[in-house]
Length: 339
Image (cartoon, rainbow, N blue to C red; front, side):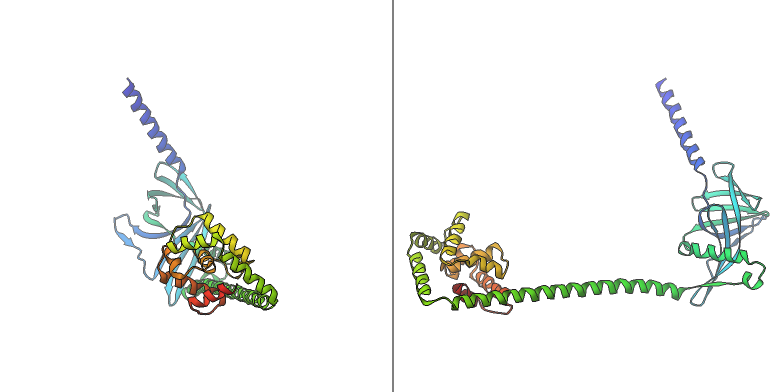
């Protein structure tokens, strides 16, 4: 009993789905090209995609007959008139096509192919998207012709859609995109150059100020500063840290903080001056701290688990970043010693 109930339910659902599909009906929207004509005696005539094509545009209630002929460097449209239409559904794939009150049988072969009978002939039409970009233009032209059918020159007129014009529009869009991105790139380069110029001026100002401040230090103050440095070199912290650095002991974050604090006490504004000149990575900053602390490049390499050549590259790279020109690692060491 349960199996019979499930079978009946399945049949009802299938019937419901079929009814929904039939209720949706056929929608004749867009462009349809004529493919072939079948005579009552079975003779077939194929409409090839050669020099000319017959097609029809459909909107909600009107159709527009046209012919397209290939001409040199373009396509000529010949409007053939317009009219109203409607559809009456007879079955799942059968309709009555009403064109200006003339009833014609219409059969749906598939989603993109229909057959309309007219005067005993069967015309097969196929949906196409070739005229989508010209749909509004074609409709306007056909409507214009329909309003002036009394003028024989107008009724026989052809309208050429230039392939060159279409290609030119496409190329113009491409050129516009290219120009836009080129201008954007130039602006980006100019902005980068302007920022580099401002940064270079800032560095020059800082370096000039450092030099002036160093030269303006009175001799008694200079001697007192040297005494402070000498005392610092004799402290237990300096001696113990130097032994650890020479032995290649790993330094924890607390050690790095103590080194930086002691250096800033003896050399005021040391680290702030470095960061004013150039934003540094953690490794670059630690290399500068060790140089100021008096460690040799080989000791720094062992302590930081890097090759001596890598430490030399870091120092020369820092010199180029700050001064904007090539320099050796020793040039950077001299600059650090002068701060």
